[in-house]
Length: 228
Image (cartoon, rainbow, N blue to C red; front, top):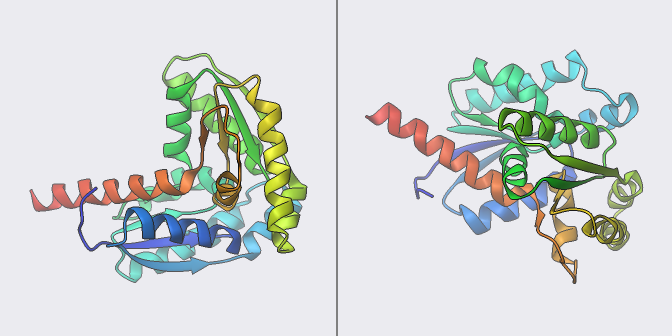
């Protein structure tokens, strides 16, 4: 990745996504300046409605507008449940805007035809599955996707029970490993569970590191075009 001193706007819908993405930037792009924008009511409302509403999309767009007005070079949405909204609003901004997990999903489709998806937010499971199916269709690849949503893990993390959160995810990883070529964690907030997992019999993808590299590369390409 380039070592330019970019400024990236991070849009969060839950505090649980903040530590993993900040850690990923510190490790993989420490030269980047981060500006955080938060509306945590979005994730609570999503857990009640189980669908992304037009009002939620407007609120996400308002956060993106704040980021753009702050002069960021790129915008990264850190909540995978809202990934489809990025396609609806990204064209309205002059800077690159990426979703939390698209690069990870593309990598998963490249790695195998039997993909396991683990989520802890109910809406994230079907959203991720649909996106994977779309990517596979574009690449004319047949895939089998097994999706598991562990809402109890989300509740545990909200209640600061990190060990319980991780253990619930570990149990599901073990179940899926026998049938899947690759397993992915659908949300940034799940990344810590990979660090505490002792046995990894199949590749497991999490989106923070992949997303950091993707947004920095997108900004680098945009800057190269502007300076050409």
